[in-house]
Image 1 (tube, rainbow, N blue to C red):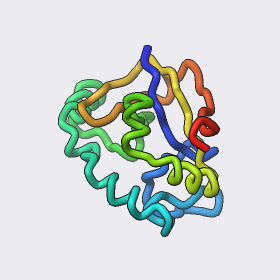
Image 2 (cartoon, rainbow, N blue to C red):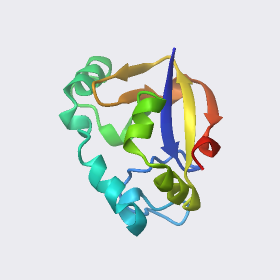
Image 3 (tube, rainbow, N blue to C red):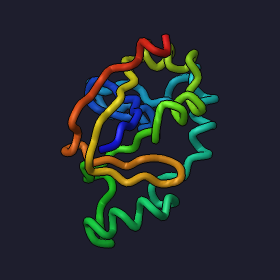
Image 4 (tube, rainbow, N blue to C red):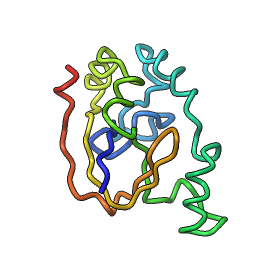
Length: 135
């Protein structure tokens, strides 16, 4: 069992998604002017394809030709300390204004790399909204 920290909107969409795909989804960090410093900071995280430990894990579970956009896996911060290192309280307030919340998620199907955690959304045991800790 692992506790991870994830920022997402009410549709389960993470804050680092690109583009406002339809009227039911919130703007991503890259679309919010007040969060451009956070967006720049995010570029220091390897994406899935550069995080070799996570790629190897998914290849082992799904085969080498898996399609990332169709996976039931999501990214999260490894713990509260890592989240607080990467996301400032002022940024949480802006994210909250755009419909994002900070969640502590308990999961038992996950892979932790040096940079982040990948977890299966079907393995979530509990979800706790902890946004108010940062406002």
